[in-house]
Amino acid sequence: MTISPGRTPKSAIAILGVLINHGPMCPLEISEKLDMAPRTVSFALRKLLGRQLLRKIPNLHDMRRPKYHVDMDAAKDILQHYSDSALKSHASPFAWQQKL
Image (cartoon, rainbow, N blue to C red; front, top):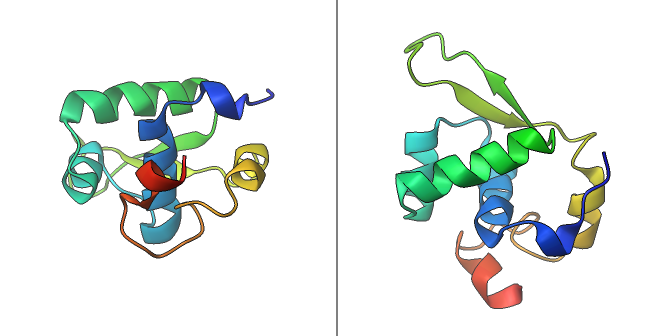
């Protein structure tokens, strides 16, 4: 599936950046890390799952809170488009707002 970077929500790009930089996380952890509303995180995760950029993996400590992992092979196109953004930097998670 080809990705259209211009049609990807900014919240989804920020979530990709956090998951790439910090590893698999559950939605609550993502929400707290980015200071985003849980509803925004859920929407972005659904978009990313629909585009097959993420994998949902079971959380063995709490099965009610699955973790999400970036499928780097599938995300290759969008990573190239945003190579100088928050996806590759270790700056503040809000750096994506300034660069997009």
